[in-house]
Length: 114
Length: 111
Image (cartoon, rainbow over all chains, first blue to last red; front, side, top):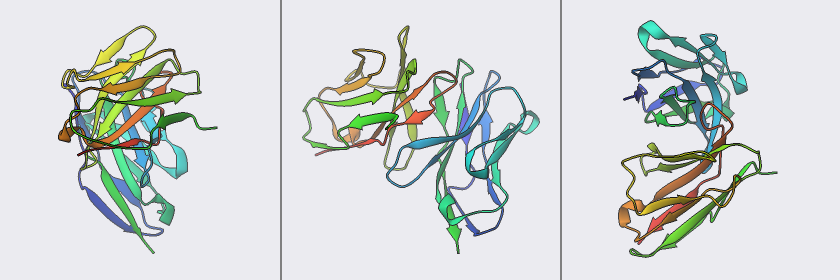
């Protein structure tokens, strides 16, 4: 069984500040890990995914995430927040079976202050 | 062009009714999915389907059934709707490695 914990249901940063969204996972098999973004009243958009290649994964919109097996973490970062980054972010883990059955975390709402 | 489209966008109906939500993807992807997002934004996989196999989340009531007339479509049929079915339902597709594109969602309200 897999699970995902996103620490902090709400994160607030100032524009230009570092964004750090935390994700810890539990998986009995080597995991595939994903980050998605959801803007208000829209569907999810894939930001990036880890599939056992490089541990530092770069995604769209300047986001990146680092897979740390020893910490069972896959935190999402962006060096400088932009107002347009305000959204809900979801971390997800798969069972390794081509990532078809994802388990999502509870989401983190990112707020960006001017 | 929209990659993954869903209809209707909003669906308001009475308890006990049967309804369907349609999903189409124009990406040529092999795998399609249905997800349910509840009022607390929690997302749960309902089904994963490609032309070879249907994977069902065992927690999904059998009132829910996916129907795929062809590779580009995966519709969701719901029988005997209940209040607890009110949620946003998302269709998604991928070629491999987890859902890549999500549709805009269908907001279902059961009265």
